[in-house]
Length: 141
Image 1 (cartoon, rainbow, N blue to C red):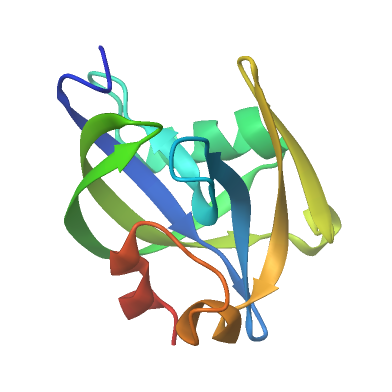
Image 2: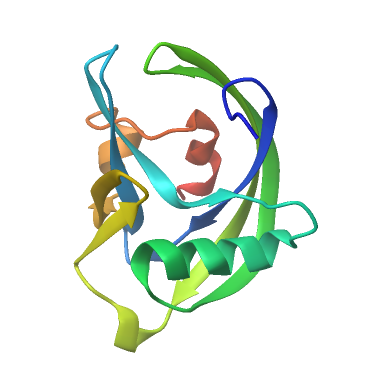
């Protein structure tokens, strides 16, 4: 699947601890913009969305998670690094076991490396930092 030519089904986990949310850092070279996004990724053909979310957390953070309640679905049409993209996103609450809790996680996804860390949700609400997709705001309460 070419994620820049087809509608891509993805799943994202909303992981909260106190007033913080676990997000990974991204960068758009064309916009020269740093942004954050919840952990998750593509849903494979014939893969259940909860199983896809568990797989993504295992691949990216090397941890097992508990997938909680389904929060909603939204459509996200955007431009990333100068390319148009279109996603249908399923959002779930996620719990991380205390033994797997870290202040920061290093993510290696193919040739891409970044970090995931806990950031105060107010930094996104007051626009100090950017979080994508913007539909995330309804889950930051």
